[in-house]
Length: 143
Ligand SMILES: CC(C)(COP(=O)(O)OP(=O)(O)OC[C@H]1O[C@@H](n2cnc3c(N)ncnc32)[C@H](O)[C@@H]1OP(=O)(O)O)[C@@H](O)C(=O)NCCC(=O)NCCS
Image (cartoon, rainbow, N blue to C red):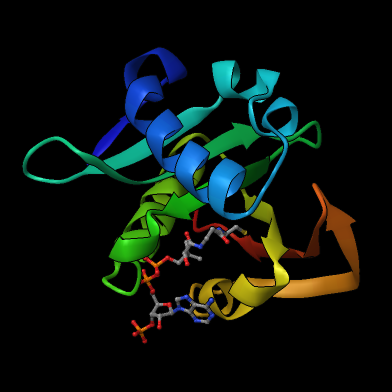
């Protein structure tokens, strides 16, 4: 598992996010590739042949102590093997290491159960982002 800035993970993270968000979920490329990538910390899981499999990112919110997790994706044929969970756990650890007290994210509604397992709770009404229904979720981070 690699962790680093956008320059370090871009080739692999692009492959995963292009396949999952742009192709599978039909998110517009102009929305998928935003300026946040350049300042986020990224996690990338690749297989033994260095083929990219799963990714996610983390960045500081404007609210002090709040870390925002996003762009969590696993290639379709590799889901259900713990890769998404491994990315999430690593992002949570990093969020705490970076001094965060709270992690927040916009969960696609189909993935709410995935985040509930790792201590997130949902709040507020469902909303549409990039054409996909989402719900706000958050959890405290260990000191
Ligand atoms: C959501 C996603 C990242 C999950 O990744 P994954 O590698 O398939 O998940 P894991 O195998 O690590 O699952 C870990 C646990 O969460 C559960 N889980 C996985 N997806 C779930 C879902 N959508 N709802 C409820 N539980 C889920 C698994 O059953 C597993 O539980 P178990 O350990 O008790 O068996 C993946 O489905 C994905 O990339 N989806 C498309 C992109 C997307 O929607 N990203 C989320 C944006 S908010």
